[in-house]
Image (cartoon, rainbow, N blue to C red; front, side, top):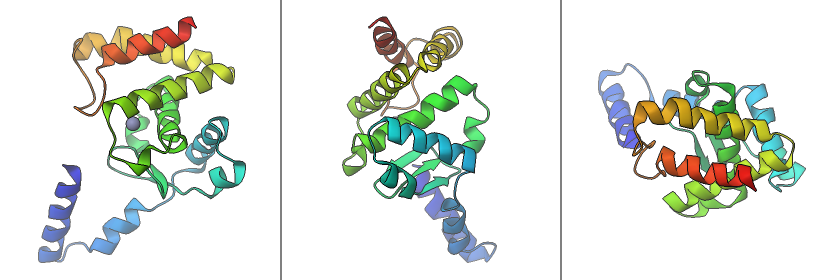
Length: 174
Ligand SMILES: [Zn+2]
């Protein structure tokens, strides 16, 4: 959906001469801040990616949703900054997990979103950051779900927040 909007925006920009497409693509390939890059790279390593590969993977900022492909990870830093630290860390680890699990090779499904959440949660628990998962689960339970309802979700491609809470609580009980 957003990709279409972006195409439309660049067509309008062309027509009006207000902006060029290279400007848009330049903005979309700007590196993420060094603290975000460092955090994502540490998660990549903890998820089993070699240090060389983790350091070589480009990590960009984007104004769209966070995305992971075989060529890099795009992080919407401005959007993440509006969320509590536990959610910010969890989302960064979730994107790193998509890369570590090779999800960029095929179309993302609800099952893959769940796999990325589970890999991220297990990684935090394994590396002494269980508190991130606990705080994120509490945030889902006491803030997100009461606001969004039990059927609330990011979009059709993601599990409901209630399902996410259930499998994160299962990992915390392991
Ligand atoms: Zn995802």
